[in-house]
Image 1 (spheres, rainbow over the protein chains, first blue to last red):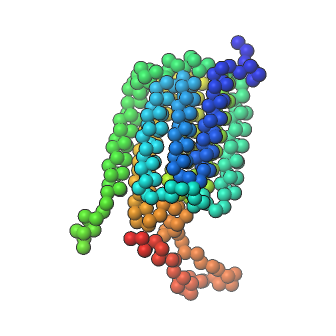
Image 2: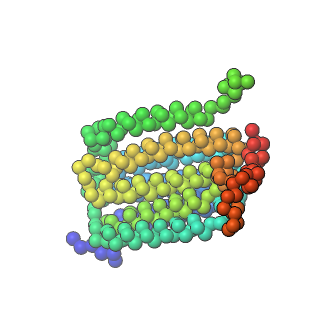
Image 3: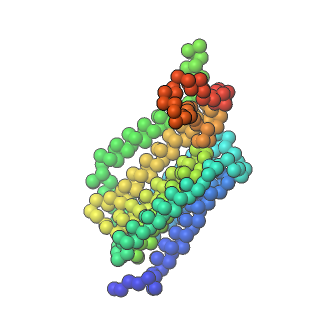
Length: 181
Length: 131
């Protein structure tokens, strides 16, 4: 079976197109002047990443991504925006005044990473269809509970700790202050 | 599929997130950019999991773990930002200078300036007024 850049498969074309959506919405997330719009463009970005997971054969992860990222995390962000009375309209306050160092670091990282990755993997091909069986709920569950039980349990404790920590941090401290006074 | 497509996409998304972390000043905007960074990493993990297809399913399982950790991180991060906003009335990272060292200016011939220059106090009036 021969591979060529000049005859891309349908999966590759779809991957590149969705990838362009990801990059565009990602750029909007970090450059747009309206903070609420940035959070909403992040939904587009996360949803497109979920589509890429599907194209790479990770079915369960795609739905987890949609549920947790595009659903829960974004709602959390919007609540955070609401509670901190963040500027709703377009503002210049969102960005640092001198953006050239950030741009330099970003472009440098992009150049370095893309060069290294292309150099290292330019002769590697894989078939995403053969990894579809890896990404189903059945096989992922088997792997989690067969090989990764301990990290899974540790992670559940971490989630509990984060939950308790977030509650403790965001509770109003008025009672204790009054008790001291 | 050529392995370069997902890996280059992950690298570019990571760079965008890196730019966002450095260029944004609002704390919530920085957290949004951190989500981009995490997504770039998970995209790479899924791609490598699909390329290598190891016995333990590391790529996809680790992605699942990272999504969980990212949810925890977002919750805690937003709680911290909320606390910061309540105490200082701003979520601007450029304004959080309470722990910064006061700027002391040295001349070339003043090698022991600590006693004379200690009267230059850091301005805490803006931050203190919010309480």
